[in-house]
Picture 1: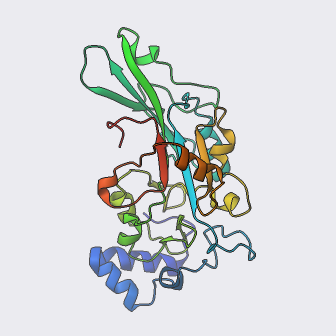
Picture 2: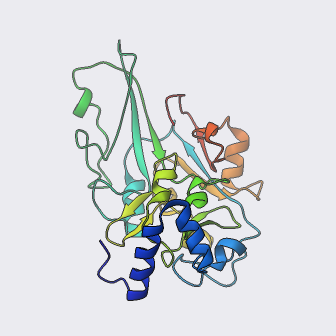
Picture 3: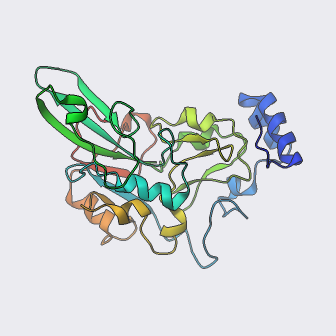
Length: 279
C-alpha cells in the first residue's frame, strides 16, 4: 500500500521496481538511470539524508562507536533520547537503538534474552523506567545478568548497501551508512539483509529506517543523542582518525569485540564486557 503523500511519479517508480524484484530490480534501476549518482560517486545527496553543511569534509573523519556493557544499567534513557531526537514512532516495535538484557538462571544452561520491546518485560514508556529482574525472574535465582545496548554497526562492508536496488542505502566517506528517502522504494531487502536486525520499516514514512549515529549532530561536532543521554558513560563516540578521541582511547585501552565477526561486515561498534552469547 502506498503512502498517501507519494507523488504520482514516485508511485509509478515504486510499482515498477517492485514488479521487477530481486536482481531484475537492480538491472532495471540501473538501465533507467534511477540509481542516484551518490551511489556511484559517494557524494552527499541533494536532499533526504540530513547532510548538514557545505563546510563539512567527510573525507577527514572515520567515526566509531564504543559500548561498555559493564557500565550499562538498562535505564533506557538512550532509547527515549533517540526516539525524541530522530522522530522514531513511539511504539514497542520500532527502534533505532535498544537495550537487551542477558540473564543466566542458576541451574539453567540456557541464556535468557529480552529487551524493552518484550511485552512480558516492560515497554520503553519513560526514560526513568528500568528493567527489573523481578518482573520476569522473581521466582528464580539470577546467577549472572548484564545489559547490552544495540544499534546500527555502520559496517565497513554493509550487506544492506549490497542488496539495495536503487542506491538509497549507501556508505559515506566518513564511515556512516545512510538512507536517502528520495530513492527508497520500501522493498525491505535491506531489512532482511542486515545480520544484526537493526533496520526496520517505518510504516509512517513508507521507507526503511535505522540508526545513523545522529548524523545531523556528529557532522556539527556534537555527540549522538544516546551518548549525551547515557548517565553512566556506557556509550562512547568519536573519530577513529583522531588517536586521542574518546572512541580511539576506548578501543586502544580495552580488549574490544564486535558482534558477529564471521559475517565479514566489519562493524564499527566496539564492545567491552559481552559474552559469547551476544550476537
